[in-house]
Length: 232
Image 1: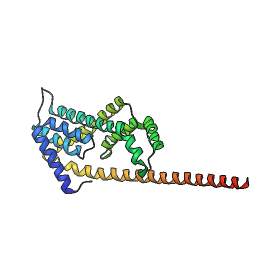
Image 2: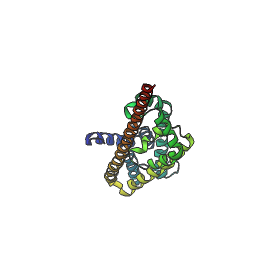
Image 3: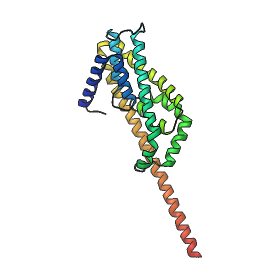
Image 4: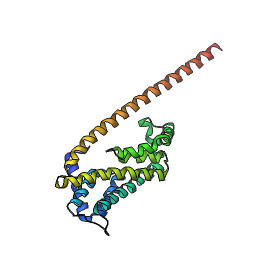
């Protein structure tokens, strides 16, 4: 969560980019959001919806502004998400192998992640696109697990399409009061963070218990081996 000052600076930056560049600005901002930069899509797409409402953003080549806005945001998000996926694919594993021990991650944990994505990757990539915070970071484990790229792009596109449609809709119907939607998503973000924190705590607890069991088994095995040697 950002402090109010930082959040205001980021929001003003977003509004300035969109006001100056229009649809290309929306595309670029959504690429940045998908690539894990702290650029909230709630501000981008809701403000875009308001600009369509006020006819500031109009049709392009006869295509309604709502559709142009939706495609600019969604395609931009897919591009950014793919960049994050590539980071996980080409840079994730070496980084985790080097620093993962501090977070109870090792090669075996990575292999488990790959197996998990083979079973549930499609569902996780789709549904997290509809959740604040986690909707962007899911790209990293997807890349590490080397999820099928076509499936990743397709599910990211559909999930982002739904998310962006909701934001644009509320920005459109709220009009000049589009910022009211941000309060709701702030609360949703808090819920998402609480759930995420609970999952992390549960996972850490499980890892601690597992490692303690392994440690005790090794100690018992060493003790049994020492006893056997003494008997000889």
